[in-house]
Image (cartoon, rainbow, N blue to C red; front, top):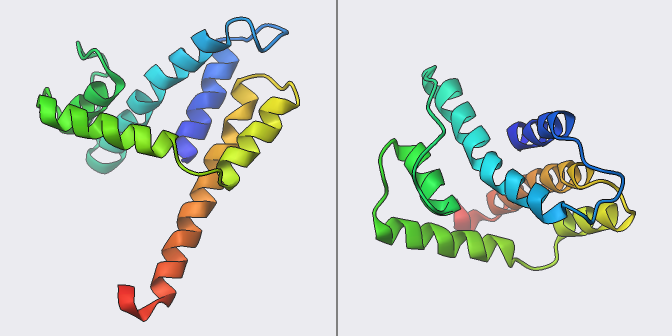
Length: 141
């Protein structure tokens, strides 16, 4: 989550948003969706193996691009469909704390880039909470 939060901040510094968050918001969202997977996987490969990867692929979807960067080869169509299903399920999760945090910030009229770090940090806290609750339950050990 720290990598994505920092990546969003770096993009905000490089790709300034206008005074109104509405014109061009879809372009900013598309840019972020295209960049976040590459940022995360570049960091993953570099931090675990010390390897720099090329982040441009010919894949025509976010899921295919992500899997290609993760495994270093073009993914099968079955894997791409599975990844797309997973991404849809994550996007359609219930109204939780991270979603609420993002909606509150965006609802204040804040710029697009400012509305993303809080939900990312909140999602990290939610994941830790779920992990701790599983550890307390002897059935899950």
